Image 1 (cartoon, rainbow, N blue to C red):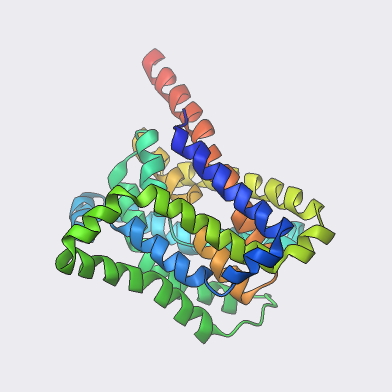
Image 2 (cartoon, rainbow, N blue to C red):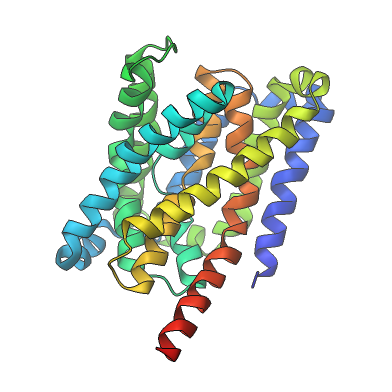
Length: 307
């Protein structure tokens, strides 16, 4: 079910988290750079996606995609925030940030493993990425009853720079530096591993004292992340329940495999340690969602065969 690269990625992610917590001194060097590293990571991820091709492919399912975008960026984050605020208020903001961020650029890879509807997943990546600099700050700033006093302007500027500069850089490099672009494409995985590690060094070293004094927080956040992932998976299936099975799986991937690394960087700059922690430990269900989605697909396919 998993490739060797998946295990390598998880090993790098969690070992770099541990290094940031256990050796904050040497890792503190990277604290000023997570935002810029995130932008380069997005640049590498967007290299394999051609916006014009994706938009042309989804013309026949545009109503479905628009509905999924609205559910992903507005409806579901609002419901989850209000529910978490009533049940587990300390995690309400962290859940809102994760649920309301754009579909992850790794989602097409997960969709390929599950034979999901690729046009839906690619469309969600392309459409939600430029929208999230507007939608996420609005949710955080103007939710009824929220008490988070974060300036709208800095949030908006940070997300715009983080998302749109990599997109523009991809288009420029394809036209002006095609050989360099091709070389980067071939080496994206090892380069991405290094970037993941450096981001975690910077983020987790910043909150090392907090983690050392509150070791139970990591376990608690992991449990919350797993529950959130299962809810997002179910919500994706339900929002596309009248569609084909590959489209249901594609919607679930689009909801559950979000751009959590962007939230690690974003939350570390504007909020306390709990929000980037939840975003970081979401790496566990990020790849673990493959198992329940594959089981769901097999059950549905067997049911259809017996019908």
